[in-house]
Image (cartoon, rainbow, N blue to C red; front, side, top):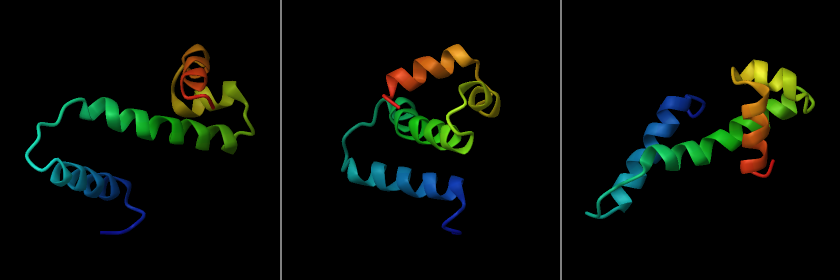
Length: 76
């Protein structure tokens, strides 16, 4: 596994998560992953474009209103 291979990193983290459940049932995995990853991606792109929300929304492929809501949600 290449340490910069994002899918491989995510798969490894998910494998550890499921191993640590130790027999308990998993639930809400999609939301858990999204809530962990999305703010990191948004913050990275905002930094990349010097906090220009119009440009960030274009790069992210979401509309500016959605971006503003996510900035508030994640307290970015």
